Amino acid sequence: MTRTTTQRLLFGAANLSLIAALIHAWMGPEHLEEWWGYGLFFLASAVFQAGYAVAVVRRPTPALLRLGIVVNLAIIVLWAWTRTIGIPLFGPHAGEVEAVGAIDIVSKLAEAGVVALLVLARDRVPAPRANDRDQAALQSLEDAAALF
Image 1 (cartoon, rainbow, N blue to C red):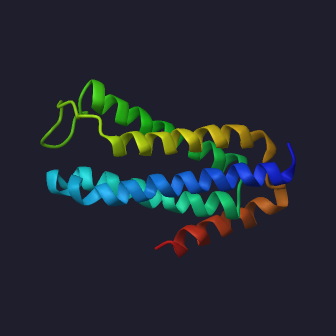
Image 2: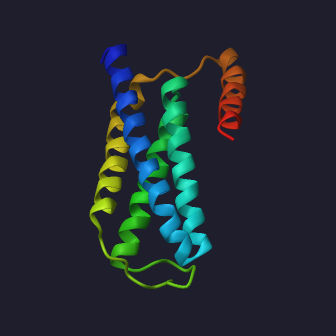
């Protein structure tokens, strides 16, 4: 796989992550009306996914790709859980099974697309060299701080 192909995969993952972030931001106020914890989860998901979109294009590392895979899979699994078993543990609707909506499907497809593209790109993104790791970690922290 060429460098250009890897960049396209990462750019595609970033775009899909932004779509998922926008959906979570859009649906956040509705969930906030139900309970502050649900709204906070949607806000945190939106912030993570938007920040991730920037980070994966600016400074992709194998660890960052793994993080994106794990977090997006966790969001997908939590969504599936809430649609089949019920909302886990917390809030006034704990135990209730949520209905599946069209916007849910769009966000889950976007997140599944992020996972798929990151899996395709993960073996093609070089790990930072030992002497670059401290600089890469510092830059990642600065990038994250810039989001706030």
